[in-house]
Amino acid sequence: MLTIGCHLSSSKGYLAMGKTAVSIDANTFQFFTRNPRGGNAKALDETDVKDYLTYAAQHGINHILAHAPYTLNGCSADEHLRDFARRTMEDDLRRLEFTPGNCYNFHPGSHVGQGVEAGVAYISDMLNQILTPQHQTTVLLETMSGKGSEVGRNFEELREILDRVQLSDKMGVCLDTCHVWDGGYDIVNHLDEVLDEFDRVIGLKRLKAVHLNDSMNDLGSHKDRHAKLGEGKIGLEALTRVVNHPALSGLPFYLETPNELDGYAREIRMMRERYH
Ligand code: FE
Ligand code: FE
Ligand code: ZN
Image 1 (tube, rainbow, N blue to C red):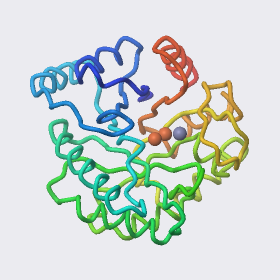
Image 2: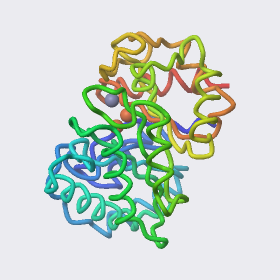
Image 3: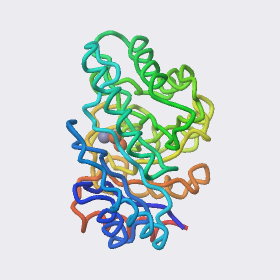
């Protein structure tokens, strides 16, 4: 069975997200841990979490994916912004212990002119300060499109970060199809080779989730504009090969396409029909 879902609003809590997911035939979902632009998270409602966990178990939701606010920049040149990123991530991970065994995805950040080496060092330092052997959440680095000075624009940069994190078994990677395409990996014509390269550079065992998006732009454009499945430059045939690829079998797939709920429902139905 294909594990597929989409990004949902977390404003009404966990149980509401679980019910919304089930209503569109999703068996997983992604959500922002707080306002995507940053700021304080709402107090965690432990009753909601408990009700959600019961509901999820009854409805076959076995994984969910938390996403850090995308403004978080753990490799900013500004010490205050780095400190803010670290405290936010620490707090997110503390809260995620209430729903143990899931993943927490974040954008490595932008080095804003200091260079990739400095960026990689700041990100791994931050992770080394935060992660403890007790954490029950796996932290994922997302593959980025390389717009501006984004770190994580190729598999090597993610590998550099992973190599420097001491509690390595707490770390994984989330592959975003729009981002890798925009980053120059030709998943349309050379999916096997791209996944082989991922395996060689990072290791497929690190891959814990896939963001399933089409792209408005061409291969190597470094733009990061998501398109609805089949309405972009990647196309439905290539995305169908992604969900059916044996190297990705069993992974959860998350839509981050420009859709409302009915559009997500349609894309989930479409990919379930195309999965064999
Ligand atoms: Fe993301
Ligand atoms: Fe993504
Ligand atoms: Zn994106």
